[in-house]
Image (tube, rainbow, N blue to C red; front, top):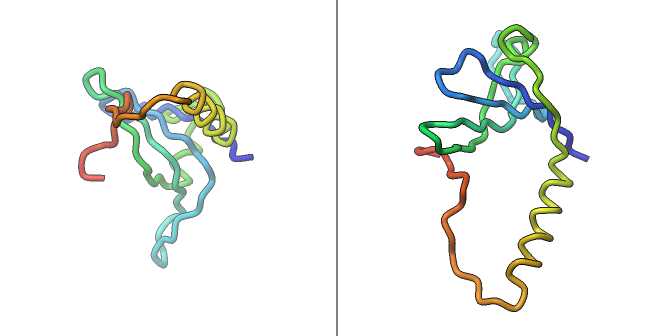
Length: 106
């Protein structure tokens, strides 16, 4: 089970959440430990999703990165796939624009 902790980034200029997955990032010698996860940002009413990296020590600052929830990614993906199968079963599938778009430059 891939359970992620959802942290709100109070330093960001936009409404931003980081999903901490605990995936290590290779850092340079002498550089602080970092972790990789997902960031979702609301930019002018449009949610943008991307992978991102944060320094682990920074995320421990609960004053600026409060925990707002948890997410079970395995269950979320499985439910999404099953819902898509039910929705499009027996129909010709056309490409659609997703509600969540990937950030530019990714």
